[in-house]
Length: 338
Image 1: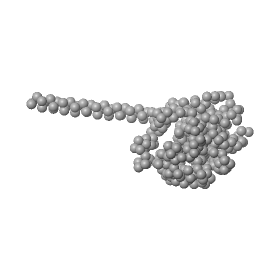
Image 2: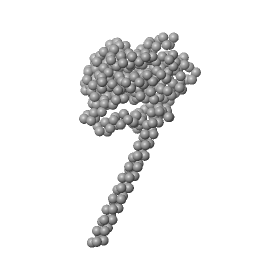
Image 3: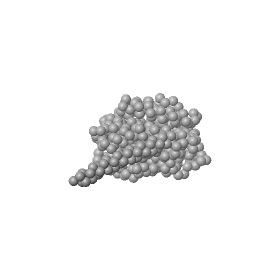
Image 4: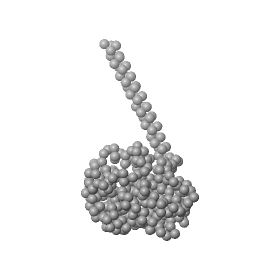
């Protein structure tokens, strides 16, 4: 009995010692991983290496060094193959249109890569495409612990402190550098709340008012607007003063027609203001040294003419929408082409 009791005590002590060792090693490993994450975050913020080289190479397979450069920054609207950027290149062979777009990103990522792209391809003109649908919400994610999963809320919260998580998400989820919404064939299907883009519906679940609040420069996005303006100010500072910068504000589809607005509300979102000269546009227009281009009136006219600019079940531009955007920009930059 005494031996058995001693064995039990020894076993208990061994388990206690083993538990302490496991806890200690787990804690040490956690510290190492956290430090590695911090180093990665710092290297990402200062772009010690070109983290978006894959995207750049995929979009610029035929770049020429013998022609004056037009640098185009943006997100998936600009990265779309055969989109407006490609059409500008085909129309103006005497220029080298350098596509610096990164799908799924916003003003912060533009600011990160701008200096490297400008140094490698000194521009005669810069076009920066913004999008009302997610540029502000990318900077200030709208967490909602009631409607969204714990995992999603933790990710969005963490991303505000570790920006490199956005890159991790792109690589892990396999987001392709050649973003092509036409592959979705959503223009062949009628509008359906069930078939609509899951990401759009998730953003609405997080905050049904986020587009309306973005358009109206709501206080909810005050910090995001300030950050966005700071990124554009930075772009103006690093680009020669003689080089024009055009900010292209792509409207959210709900701003373009009443039909689109009604569809958006059917998805669970609040009604979006139809003001053409909306408050956020005015805020961006206050930035000195840039020209803001607002195609919303042009888009509305094309929709009235029967041109479908946006997919039925996705907020991106259709091929026709990309072509109309090209026509709009080509006309707006007519003095530059001369």
